[in-house]
Image (cartoon, rainbow, N blue to C red; front, top):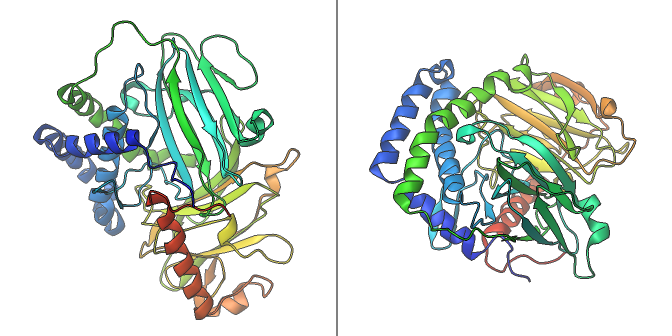
Length: 422
């Protein structure tokens, strides 16, 4: 067993601060104003939209509070933020914070930096690491939007520079640098994101820490009133962006088709996605080629793009959780009831929502045009006729084992010293 790299003093401090902030009367009032905006959204008038509205809003508010609580580029911390699964750790209950189809395979950690500053991010990989990327992005005004990518480094690019203990340092600043340097732009506010994408929930994410190499001479710590004012100022634009994200994500495609795969800025992976809308007795069959990728994953989300709790429901699957066919392809069926197909994605009661597929650590020369093999609606009552016999099936005993393993392995991330090397 080894220490949990997510269990840090900085994580504890920022979570406790954010949880205090969202209970302040002034921030609760700002939340209610945002709620009125969501109620006016046409999605708020649908069953799934109305049922998910307050959960989505709470996830967005806490996500912003976490970012603002760790918003000091003179004294940055490495903080795991965007993860919607609730957890009981550090002596408090953290209800989850997420945006844009949060992926339970990912550990998205944030580091706020100044585009004029010099920083070092120290990383230590485990023996069998998840797919890893570190990305620098110019932060939009009010944090409301997708950042402009300045550069990215992946596990495959960093590994040649690791020492025998798996350690490597990435430098970040406005000057030119070597192969483990990310260049920034002076005069900008920047977020550095590290992402561990587990192809297996038993994989141990990287240890990550940050140092500012040129701390400013005059600096004072922000007080909670100042941070609260930032949350209140930024909340309208933040909620407007993430509530509107669903309207133009991937061009808001017609249901039950996929757009992509599209390359990620910085060249660190591909994604494909779309909306599902299923009637009673229907499922959505998706067949992909993992193409030798270090990581592949599929997730669903509600119409607001917030995913169901992934611990007890099969609302996502990664590389270790799937059963490929003999030809190496992977077939998923998205459905509200168990179709008996090995790679079932449970809609968790949703009639409509989003589905997203990801490929990371893709071998050079792989053709993304061949990643998606089939997308079609199937009749669950005729599943054996509708889905080729070569697609793996499971019985109830095996399904129970999948669910038990899922709950046990998901729980590893919230223990202080419960991760073991494979």
